[in-house]
Length: 390
Image (cartoon, rainbow, N blue to C red; front, side, top):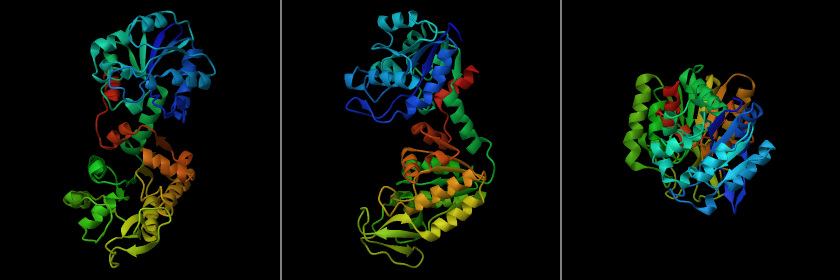
């Protein structure tokens, strides 16, 4: 790579408050790959987006602070140019020396990025020898910097992209069986494609969180004031029937923790859904102890586990208990070498972090929407573009 100019698509859409970066995880994770290329004499141009500026420059969404943070992570200078495809960007690329690192301005300041505009991509590619996509988390979008640009440069997957794809393939592509999946969260409607895809691919499907209430209603249980989607009851029945028809074990909580207020430490009680009647103002906020025990047994029979979504209102103690207990159980089995565990999704990461087991899973995806679309079985344009080039 010495002397070659390399364009790296990163995802540096990091949390920021008043111009200060509050979490540098994404920056730190990609800095190793950038550092290695720089040490081999490549001339590096880093591309990323930040926020949703809607195709227009917005000083509050500049990547200037991100360039500073990347320089700190790399312990070497990063030149920042407040331009994307103009003369300043072209000149900065042309002046790069071996081992230099340049970051261009927020891609989404240009309308051509989200429009997947090929003319925009051509200018991005000008003066560049190769393209590396190291932003799996952005690859579910057909944008100029993830899809169109591959038409104009030799294109490759970066180290982070390869690690993510390898982990996901291990979980669903060519998994060790039996395979289990925990799918939680508030609504069936937001995870419908995930559920219908997974029920056909896993051996055990565990449904938790608010969406379990809709499945419980489909079974005829009274869920009182609990979060529920009555219009999704027939869909829940259909998923249950599909699971039974193809031999996928579908597990629902058969007991739970209920309260009359959605608040931390609200007065609560444990109920068995089969024979305990809920008061009109009670709501299910967590899975119960019997459910946790049953799910642990199911997990013990699995060799691979995928987790997306909490089992209850984990942000409110004591309604975090089921999620925490199960997370710690998965971590223990993973540490023992008995389980490959892959997790993803914002709430899931927060819950695992709260349970102090985030670094004890085999792989935790920070890809957000891309991880969800992978769970849905969808083709990711950024990945498909790399496959086509290979």
